[in-house]
Image (cartoon, rainbow, N blue to C red; front, side, top):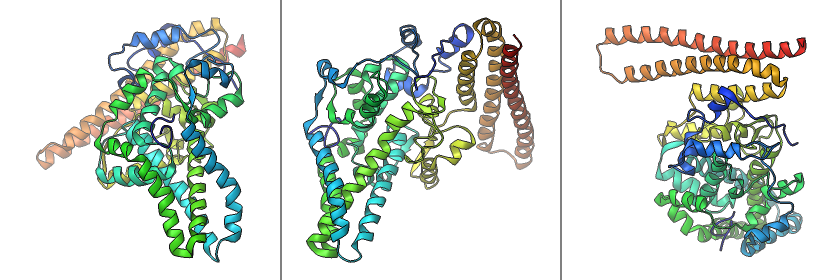
Length: 469
C-alpha cells in the first residue's frame, strides 16, 4: 500500500526582484540555507539558485511562483494517479467519524463518553506533538545532531503512528523535497504545493488533503531524500508501519474499550480513536495549506508566511516563513514572538536537557539578521519609486553589511567564551580572561544593536524621502 497506509503519501503578493549588491547577497552562499543546500543536492552550486530566479516568469518570484496547472484534472496527464488504498481508508474513516460519532456518544455506556472525549483529544495532541517534534524538526530537518533510541521508540513507533501521517522515513523525505524547491525553484517536485493552481480553493484542497491521496510521479529528488533518511529506527518503522497502524489505532482502542464496557465500549473507543487521528491529520495539514496561503510576513524563498495567530500545529503554523528561511533551526521562529508562540521548541529543549537529544542547531545572529534585512529590503523596494530605490540601494546594502558584521563579531566572542570555559586554566587567570571577554561581548552586543538601528533608520529615511518627492 502507499500513502498514509504504507509507502509514499504523498492574496497573491507583489513580487520583488532584487538587483545590484542586494541581489548578489541573495544568491550568495551566506544566504542559501545550509540545510537546503545539503538536502537538495550536495554538488549543486549557487548558479542553480541564480538560474531558478532568472527563469522565474515575469510577475512572479520564488515566494510567489507561477501556477503550473489550470485544474486538478490536468494532473492525470502528468503522471499522477489516485492512490485508491489511501483514498479508501481516508474516506471510510472520515465518514465513520462524521456518522458514527454522534451515535457513539448517545449510546455509550454510563461514564464512557468522558473517556471517549479524553481519548480523542489526547491522541490528537500526542500525534501532533510527535509530528512536530520528531518527524518534522528532529528527523526531516536534523535539528539535533544526535537523537537517542528512546526518542525514536516513543515518538516514532508510538506517537507518530497515532497521527496517521505515513511512515516517518517517507514523511521526512517528502518534507525535504518540499523545502528543497525553495532553492532549486523546481516547484513541480513539491509534494504538497499551495501554488500549483491559479485558484485559491484548488490550492487549498490540494495542499491540505488531496495531495496525500495521489500517487505522485517518481522523481530523483524524492528518491535521493528517501535514501538519505537511513537511520535503522526509520528503516524499521517504515517496514512495520502497517502493523503498527493496526495495533495502535485499531486493536489497542478496541481492547481498552472492550475491557471497560464490552463490545459497545470497544466500538465507542474505536470511533474516538478515529476522531483523534483525523484531528491530528487536519491540524498538521494546515501547515501545508494555511501557512503557505495566508499570513503577514512572507519568507524570502518560499510561499510560507508568518501569520502569528495559528497555534493549532504547536508552533509550526505561526512562524512558517521563518522556518522556511532557515529550516534546520530547532526553533520555529525568530525573536520574542518565536519563544512565545512555539511550544514544540520547549519539548525539544526538555529532551536536550534530559540528554535524549544532543547538539541542537539554530540560526546564528548573523543569519537571523540577514533574513530580517532581506525581508525589510524587499518590503522597502516595493513601496518606493524605482529611481529612489536605485539611489539608496547601495547605501542600504552597506548598512546591512555593517549590521551583519557586528552580529558576526558578537558570535565570534560567544564562541571564544565557550572555548575558554573548556580550558583548564588557573582560577585567577580564567577569571581575568573571562572578565575581559565579557566586556568585549557586551560592547559587541551594543554595537550590533546600534548597527541594527542604523539599518532601520536608513529604511525610514528612504521612505521619508519618498513622501518628500
